[in-house]
Amino acid sequence: MNDTDSPSIVLDKLDPGDDTLARYKYQCSTAAINCVRLLTDESNVARVICENFEDLLIEHPDGTFIGLQVKTKRLDLDAFKATDTVIVKSFARFCELDQLFPNRFRAFDFSTNHRFWDTSENEKNLPWILCELKKRGTVKRLPKTNPMRCFVNSICVKTNLSDEQVTSTLCKSVVNSRLEPVDGIDHRVREAIGSFPGTSELTLSQNAALGEQLVSLAFQASSKKTTGETTDLYAAGIDFSTVVEAHTLAGKCITKDLVEGILTAPKTESEPLELSSLVPISSLPTHLAVMVQKLDKGGLQAARIEEMSDLVKSFQILLLKWVNRYGVEKAEERYQTLLMTVKFECTESQVACEAPNTQYAPQMYEHLLARLRARVADAHDDLHGCRAEHLIGAAGMLTEQCKAWWSPKFKIEKAT
Image 1: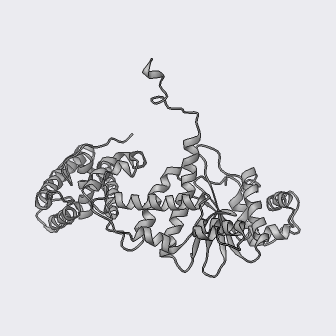
Image 2: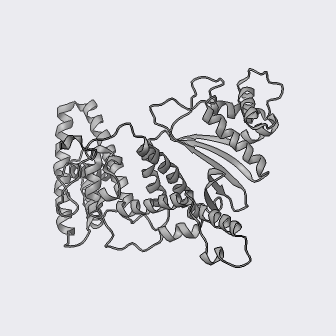
């Protein structure tokens, strides 16, 4: 038997199943981000309800709702147009829902990881149509060929609603284009978690683990999960179908206490810290994947890892400016001088902070930052006008190049 014929080592490039799951995870990740708002934006979010009439319902404390549809597609495909069947169908759904529950919906939101066609102001340009419709408030006295009239009529035909009813819903509808690959939202989930007080000291792995739990919570709520007491299902004198319906609806609702239970749960030191098992290396910026692994292994807080990534880019921009201003040779000389200085400081900080069986990257970061600030303040050191932040960026580059470590050395998983 030939090993090359085994399906375990040959990738099926025609199977769309994994792509479908990635799209669905994008929707659940959108729900997870809104779940964080249950704690950070309580004046606007009371509950998040999944897959009930819409992909998401965001309930406000006053009992009104925002209906949200999340649509995804590959970024290499055509942009969404107002004439697309999926657009007409989605906005028809908004209009029907608005009529089914009068005065309950304050807004409707069509969000996508892709973009909307906006090359010209015509019948294909959905953002422009909605904007102009809100300004006008009606399609009365518009010719049949007018783009606003055409879009409203297409929904009227789909729903059997009047143009006034359709226009009323469209005037409180918005469209949002995120322009990101479907797996790019993982980073946004981690950012959202970082906005909750008390999470800034978490490592990247711990932050990512919380994100996975929130996405899983949204997935369960989006599935046919039921929540309620089993005894209710067998209680005498009740209508079984009514109880099942109530339990199913309860399973779709995500409340503040559920999210708070995840984000405030104790984080133990025995929690797994291997980055690769929690955050796919392929989802990280390839040129900084090594740095992120090493900082996370040392236990550096997620916020500081994100900050160092930005400072590496800032340092790279400084190098480009030097090349343009002084030429390659002079810029290279400055670059190497700075790296030698920062490498020395990284080594000294590691030696000062390392301890057996302890994640010492947070202490090393603070120690290193203090030493670099002292260097910058010393007028006798020629650092070519660099700030301490630039030098932290240089430390990030040294970390990426494996010339600086924040923990005992370990095998680096290569990005693909």
